[in-house]
Each structure stands twice: as structure tokens, then as C-alpha cells.
Image (cartoon, rainbow, N blue to C red; front, side):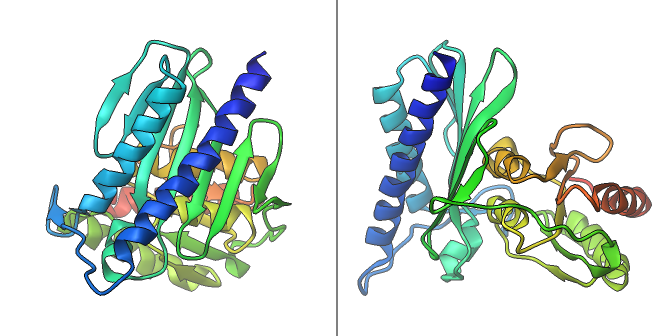
Length: 273
């Protein structure tokens, strides 16, 4: 029964993500591309009317179809019923990219089983590239129906690593100092600006690893299960699970190498949000 409940929610998550994509594309097509941009915690932390419209669409669909499920969203906070499942939603991950038209932003939807405190399925829809990443617990990870897996690279020096930066100036300064020390020790570094997509890039082998501090659950939960089901590893820094202090995702083979390096430099520079 529980497996059917998860499969039903994964099917729904796919449909919700596609509906959100249609809304986004309808709002940015045509000559009058008005996004209604506001700032939140700083001038670099932005939200648009489209973010809010997509989250309203997703939340409304979830409440209609799963009235007892809880909803946790970036713009609307906590809400919903008292059932055993919770939906963790980021309507547009990579809002700055979206505002500028930089083609790296996504809709991220995860479903948690609150009885086990575990993510049971997740969907990340890369809107500009029209790629649908998905995973369910124990079922593998897929993009557009094709099974994906992490790389087999074993040396950090030969690894392509992704990262991201926070919004506060002092945090960004520390994170930049970390990058300056990490860069000579790896193949190269990438910064796409959307954590959910960074995680999916690890899952499908476009990155060997990724780290970032300051993430919220809606930033990483869907991407994390996709990495794990693709054969990778996702942890925090000092903690076994990812979180605001640090999120580290790799192919599993280089995990402890990257984790040790990131933790030592985070301690040196205080690069935590």
C-alpha cells in the first residue's frame, strides 16, 4: 500500500512540475516580460510574482489531490493537513537566473514520509532545457525516462566540482576564499546558481561532486534523493544529513576527500550561512 502511495505522489509530482513549467513559459513569452521582482533578505535575494504564482498553483493542486498531506514551500511556508506525507516545494530554484534569462532554473518537488523522516520521491524539472529528473526510494534515478548514474572518478584532483554562494556579503567573501584554495586541487569548478540542478548534474555524471552551505530543505531534498538513487552520496558537513551548515554530494568515491577539504576550509574561513 505504501509503495502505491509513493508511486501516486510521484506521478502527481511530474504532472504538477509540467503545469508549473507551462505557467512559467506563458509568463515569459511575448514582448511584455514583466516578472514583478521583489527582494527578500538582501538585494541579491530576489523573488518574483512568477515564483509566487507557481507555488500557488502547486500548493492548490496538492491540497486538492492530497488534502491530508502537509506542504512546505519557499514562499508560503508550512501548511496543509496532518497526514503522514509532506511535500517540499521550490517553485523556481535559481530565481536570479530566471530574472536574467540565464538558462539554469528549475521546479523542485520532494515528498517526505514523516513517519520515517525520509524523502520517498523527488522531481526536478529543468525548465529551460526541458529535462525531467526523478527518483523514488529504491527505484533508481532517471532523466526523461532514461536511467542515470554518477561517475566513477576516484581522484579529487581529476574531479569537476560544483558549488554555490549565499546572499550575505560576508558569507560570499568567505565562500570565495574557499574556492580560491579548492580550485588548484581539483580539475575545475562550476557555479550554475540552482542547487537542485547542481545535484542533478552530480546524479547524471555532469559533475563529480558538489558542495554548498546555506541551503534550505526545498533547495536540496528532491535533488538529494535523485543523487542517492543514481548511486551517489549526500551528507552534511559534520552531520550525516545535508542541511543549512553544509550540503555535500558526490559520486560516493571522492566523498570523504571532498568532505575533508571543504570542512577544513569552512572552519578556516567561517564559510557557513
